[in-house]
Length: 158
Length: 158
Image (cartoon, rainbow over all chains, first blue to last red; front, side):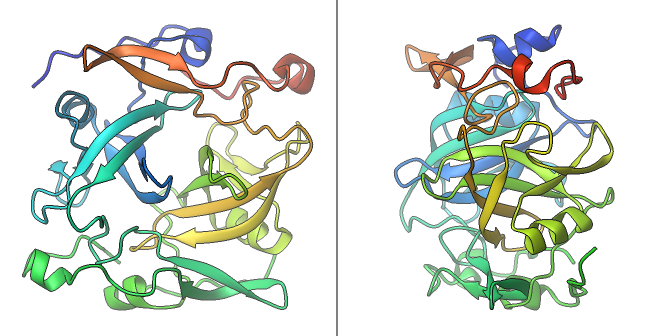
């Protein structure tokens, strides 16, 4: 536990135009986090932090999240070794969303499926129209998730 | 209303490794959206779409969201003229988050406070430690929100 005390939100003007960090946590105590690779500006993942995960991220400079499926704080890399080293935090206008800018260690991958980014597919259009067809934007996996995670449950839920 | 029919999610393998768009909407019918400027890779905003907003985005190539405060579909730019022209859509591993890559019209701004990006502030550290101090990363506003929005209610809530 760290001693960073987030300030109470008292005015819209201060939230939008001020220089005091006043993050808003939703009714579940969570704030969405966009994670971006600092050195390339590539989006790596989208997750959630709660107050304690945010404090741990700020104090340890390792990205921490709140896992909604496991209902607990999750230090990214604790199982896989794919740690995210914090370089910068940004917050949006109404202070209800964060960006963690991070650099990656080792294999330089972030996604549990084995790709660098979780956003490894894009929609493709035919004759200028989108339907429901995707194509991969990463050609091959950086690591084999079976070797890294073994028999741990897959966090992806239907 | 458009006729794009999103497919039912039937297997984790298909969701993660398949080439069919199967977006997951949460218990409120929403999916988070990260909006990025296509030509600069800069994060502009974080919002939410519902099924209809996503279909409208795909069919009109103008970004649409679901406004949680106003409880309705929101065509970005409908009040301000700050439209977002869709260039690409990406989806993440478990297909519960989207990226809209867009280019901006006119003033090339996106944030209702007057800045280009909603993420116009970052945390600053002192002696290597973060506390609750922010600094602005955009030096001046691109437009005057009073002139653009008049007396419309501010979407930022405490």
